[in-house]
Length: 176
Image (cartoon, rainbow, N blue to C red; front, side):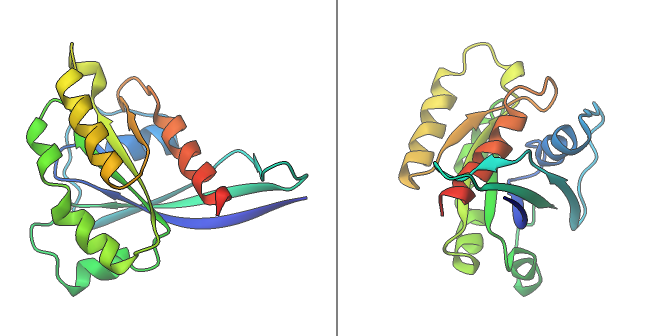
């Protein structure tokens, strides 16, 4: 038996970390070198391959409704409305800009206040652009450990680990 379940998942992070590029790579298998800042929210969707639920004969197929949110300095009630009903979030950092690892609480805190039971995965993007990411990876690992959440390093440009991060989110949902 197989069923399709929709899950709203938000892409969180400061400007230029690659949220839109990760969504484009996952949904359309495309990468665009041009930087276009997201204004407001862009919504995309894609269905994951079927995932087996534990040891049962049941398969679940998740349809992700991806909310790619523009980085907003001030979180007002309008932005919190974008968060409402989300089942999960990818918190995206730019590994070439270590300062992006310091800003996550400014958007993750309001998200978790709105959706305290949401699943979180931390993403260190642009791994293809750094030679020795040791320090950034240690920081990313510490942040993820604080939330008892998984983390991935990705490259929207090459596609490295992009599909894996989404499949991991589906796996987390299926565990519930």
